Image 1 (cartoon, rainbow, N blue to C red):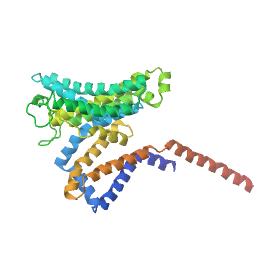
Image 2: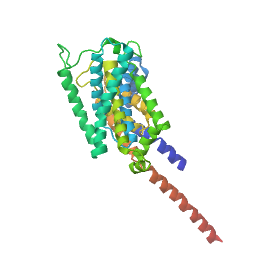
Image 3: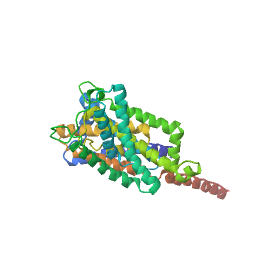
Length: 363
């Protein structure tokens, strides 16, 4: 029994996702669609088709980095809901740096632009961390509100001081050709951004598993009192975790500009910061699993169009399925597994005396 329970607890998130997909099939059937055909087309288009796979990889990069931007503060006991705003600020800083480094050798210019994107995101998230550390203001509220501020800052920039001459729509000038990220799959938009995401996931996993910095963040997240007793500066851990998460989200914004858009647009992010929250919770805050959850979510999004075209399923059904996944995963994470294990252990202990009593009475 205990082994089966441990297995179910270990697989509770995949089970929740499968249950969500099964529930989603009821929505498809309710719309007079064929769930088997719809899911078959979705996964074939997203993961097996050359062009569909390239589209999935394009979406995976920002979702993965945004997921890591949630995971790092989450391990420190904080909720970074501001990934979307940090993506916008990262894209803004990257564009400004790229436009001012035209003519500079790429060996110097490209790392500088990437560093600028990460710095912008880090500063934006550190603001929320500082308010939490020194003023006790809830970081969920601050990061959520900072999203809207960041979006409006970028909107002002691309429709005002950074707007390209004669542009019919709010966008900046194009970044130099030399600063554009290489293409991974020929004749597609799939770029090297996904490599940045995988590298970041590996680095964050190593930090939490093998370094004192990661251990300090974990301790601060589990118990601030224990962290203080151990001599850790809890306020420093709060700001550090938020700034690191912001840097990763800012990198996502920079990569969107360098690898796909080639200029800064009004509303250039397709909600990747919010998708990252979903991907992060699907992993139970484990950075090594973030590439898998991000790839899965990106596949759902890239396959939505083919479901609508070939199976006659409205694209909003996929959004509904993602919402169901969130609910089911959140429910699975809300299980009090410690109480369930304790209850079963208590049941096992209660069985032993009853057997002994029956033997004594028989004598």
